[in-house]
Length: 84
Image (cartoon, rainbow, N blue to C red; front, side):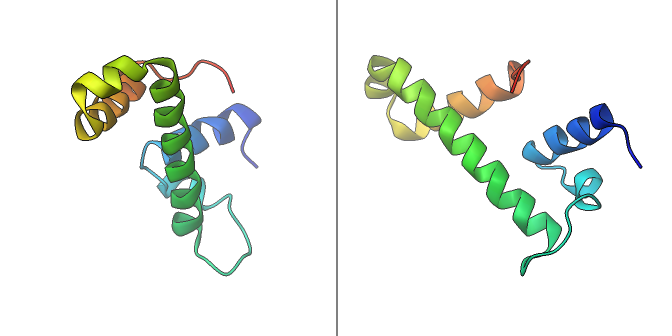
């Protein structure tokens, strides 16, 4: 059985698109593990982008939606969350 930190690291990698390590920890349900982790990851990314849009509405207006979505994605990659 993996330690909690190992499980958390695998889950964090799954949020960034590498579901392989965390797939073995997801059991049950109608969807396979990768699909279920993908749904969660999409929700996390969307919530992060929405939070940035609420905090920086002028940047969103100036840059436009496509640019802002890309900038939010790059910011999340460069500055990963250090807490839940």
